[in-house]
Image (cartoon, rainbow, N blue to C red):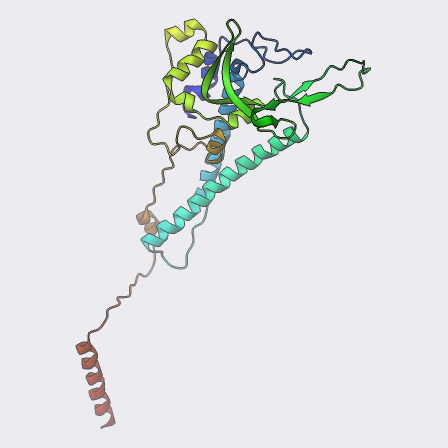
Length: 299
């Protein structure tokens, strides 16, 4: 996903070229554009921008993890066997991968906690709305109320309230659902709860282009092709939240060379122990031999 046109600056611009730029709310709780409050066209650009940022952060975290791994010292008092060498190295790799993911998720959790804990009102007007009371407040404060989404989820209590995304047409009134995508309290939280199913379906991509791209760009050349599921360890209905936890790594390839390890260690002495179970005849022969030797000594 992170190497697709959907995560590039140019791709985001082309895909959203026909959208109205003013997507915030006015003082009367109305969108400045002609889109209704929950029309997905208000959130598409923010979702793609968030995806681009997540890919960049994941890529940086992965590179830092690899650099840290390559700088590690792997010291032993004796040369490991090929089997034990593979086991220990795979364990270190898994630990570094988990640690990189934890650093990124902890950073995002801190930002999310600050945003929700301080009840910061989204510019999109999707988590809180201002209430205009009948009486004059003399400019002291302006009360707000939290928006409610599916399952009576309140943005005042939970940051991750969502509802399925739709393109909304006013005349005639029509809701056109978009596979896998959601809207909610904030664009970032709703995107974390979304999946990328739409981007694996060419018909769904064409639908987005129909509502968001300029016709001239759409008809000329279409760089937005559905994603491939080949060599991916994730099903297409995996949430963005789970992809973040895995750093968007589609396939993790590692090459372990025991020969390089052995040559690097360059042991001064190699020895081995051969264990064999002796037969009854062999044992008796040794015993008689020992007895004969003792008899000679005593004589």
